[in-house]
Length: 421
Image (cartoon, rainbow, N blue to C red; front, side, top):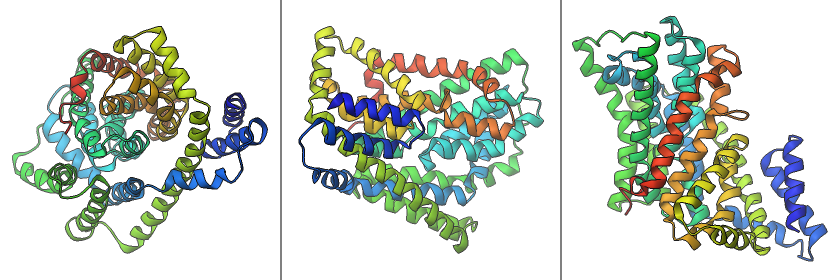
């Protein structure tokens, strides 16, 4: 049954069938050809896959991110980043990373962060004699911060799949998000010194107060969400609704960049994206049920535990699996396939599920800017009007940064659970 399941799934993916449909068809074929399970299980398992209160956060966080993006806050965040880090050599590269970190804390999406910041920063960098390939690489690598810095949609998905606290995942994403941002800025500085890239002119003093005032309200959103969760005012799911209301207030009443016509388009695109994700979660639950029924997680756990009892070795094995998976699959699809299968190993080894969740999301974020399916790469290279392969070569230093930090997190796991509650 498992053999039919995986062979059918990989054949469907290779020929270009969408992941959600591939999961469903492979599951149906495995039941029809490899077992005597009743087909009545199909609708039950698909429904149970989406019948979860925390999943309400998915469309709401998507909506909040779309609202804040449409409110044109990226311009203001770029101004704040320029104020903070633009004075150093390679200033615009630092601004791209800083603005991506700020916007990642609001949008929760790597592609959205890459597109919003890239559309502003890549043309500006090219005008300042930065190479198009380097400009695109900086934005693509920095855009991955959208998955890591909370509130993050992928953290919601992992929390539901694993049973880990979504609030703890959000809080534990803060420290690695800051560390990775600083490490990327350090790499920007090293490259800038080698290439002779100049610093930007200091922001005029009379503009400082304006820049801070215009950006501070947008940056309050993640603090409101995390503060409310930590204080027990609302749950992680309810915080998504609060984020939507706050975004509407900022867009309509403060920045006044939202219109009802734009809001209708936002609702339409959010509904489409949410439907795709929820359909994926439903078919993935059916897929996961078959894997569990055939005791694949238990078998995998026994194999790995039989091979080694070292948590460090196990985490390096898992890291290799995640890096390969992330290069071929979208992060949500990778989570729904990987997490139910590997949780048996995590529980058997006594690994903290919150630590593992944050680690997994960082590892999958690397796939956002690595070929062949790195969506950030495609977005950034299109904006820069540069060949894909040229951008890939420029991302290698940033790939090394992520891999180095992932190695550090394996040896010092407390860095990923500093704010766990």
